[in-house]
Image 1 (cartoon, rainbow over the protein chains, first blue to last red):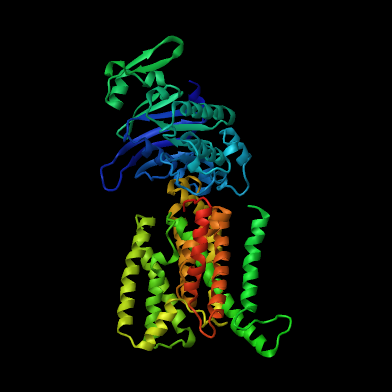
Image 2: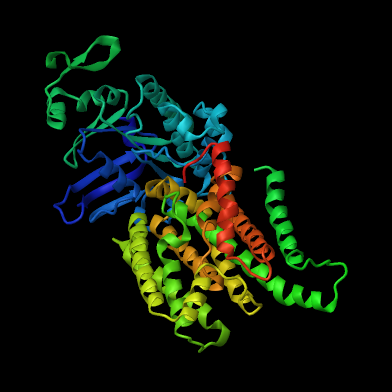
Length: 258
Length: 321
């Protein structure tokens, strides 16, 4: 496999995590993300996708185990240096913020004293927001709002993007646009993307899928291998038929459930 | 932001400061000063205008910082209870007739009360390794009620003269401004403004939420702590310089947002300049309207500021925070 030869940029090894005084939610989690990987983190609501993303980006501290970023211990990397390596886009976007699109996107440059190659104008152009620079977030459509924050994340210039359910509440048109944009950027700029999602059909568009249940990885690999009927039943507690139809690839049929 | 706006932000406050120096119950022509006028200008007006400007600047800047830190457009520097604590210790000094530090007794007591209250609020707002906006807000409101009740209790059992003087102080009294107060006021207010202005990017990020702030390379709890300390210093200095002045801390940041937007890097200095200028005008009016009587400057700031604010609210689109 070509991904095996890629250098690992994120490595979680034996990570434990518990919320408050409750039992450990995550136990001995280990996985890695290679340079240029395009990974879908798939699981049901409450399966632990967000917790895993937050552990990987340092927002949550593991109670045991290690998180390494480009071979360095994440906890030992300074905040600004870390922001140049990895950026985390939260699931909930508070749209009630007072900034314009241009101001928001520009915040992507905050970790830098000397700005990197990309400019605010380029980030806006890449996400199709050039004519919205002076608009306020509240005046935008759901898709434009998401793209605003994506543009900020792109401008931040990190090599690894952790996007927590960026497709949630988006029309199918915007979902497709966003995934296309990220795939393009990944090829152009060699960035790695880990995206949490819970739409199985969308997960089929990723080259690598990690299936999460109750804080543990129950499957990892190409969508064809991971998204089998038995694995999906385990992860989502629903028996769905996985159909493979020639050139159209793989899709999930829900027909028998209605 | 355009150069014209930046020029206006600097020139208008400057003109207002000059006007408050030379106008008043007795107008002074700077080109033809006699001995008495020079005395009035240098030893009465200049320290008073400087103190007024510093107080207003501290309130404007700390309002802008606090509304962002607490993510609440209704936050003002007094909401943290800092002013109630300062008023309580100042009233204790005034009503109790304490003079152990001469003319500095009451300001020093107020400063101690303000810092002590700020620290208590900080301790109450601290949980799981950081300051939490909601906890800070609720701790401040709780302490405010307690200290206001104690203050009223003290006033209700004090003599008429002590009561009158304490009331005057609490409503904001600039007539006691003198050169001695300028250096420490300048020190703390400048320190607070510089400290918060250097953290302005972090403040912008915190307005988006802690997760964004973290992702953009900031340590949210540390940044919030630094900003909280800067607000504490500015508010304590302002209250101890001349009591409580309403309106500026709450609404000057909103007035400035109408003109220059919400980027804290501009908003903090702009709110400081606007706050300073507004208190200078208010003080000019308060001493010129019915001389020799002086009206409380805090009342004038609200009487001229509030209608203007409401006019802007009608005319312009409102932004949050």
